[in-house]
Amino acid sequence: RDTPAVTSTPSLSPSTPAPARPSAGEHPPKPSTITYSHSNKAVLQRPLEPEQYTSLLFTNRLESLELLPSLGSTGDCFDNAKMESFWATMKREIAWTTDIETFDTRDELRTAIFDYIEVFYNRQRHQAGLGHLTPYEYEQQITAA
Figure 1 (cartoon, rainbow, N blue to C red):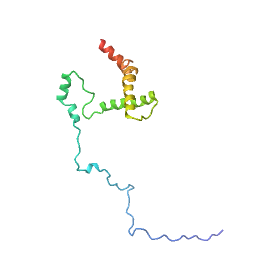
Figure 2 (cartoon, rainbow, N blue to C red):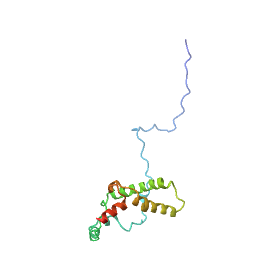
Figure 3 (cartoon, rainbow, N blue to C red):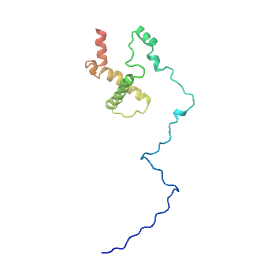
Figure 4 (cartoon, rainbow, N blue to C red):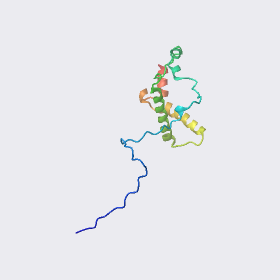
């Protein structure tokens, strides 16, 4: 069977006068949106820099007070990791023990944190790292010895 030839309408002229540039398949880099790196404004610095915690003078002062320094040194993440772990545990366990997800006032939150640390964590929560004693029981055992 013979069918008539189909012809399409011719394409419109290109939208750009020159042919498109060849691409390597990558998008061109976007301009930076970071503004803080270009700022010339004065900034406040923390009054105590981390280097002071690891200085020889500070270490000697700790020894003279018979105190132990924290776990890490400048640039270590270990001190912060322990504290972050504690905060995460505390948030989770406060929500579990109080059945409250949000607090209406700071005083309510302050009371919940105090109760968690002083009542639950120190006196009721057994710690595997302390021989399955509570921190209070462990402290009593150490001071009695």
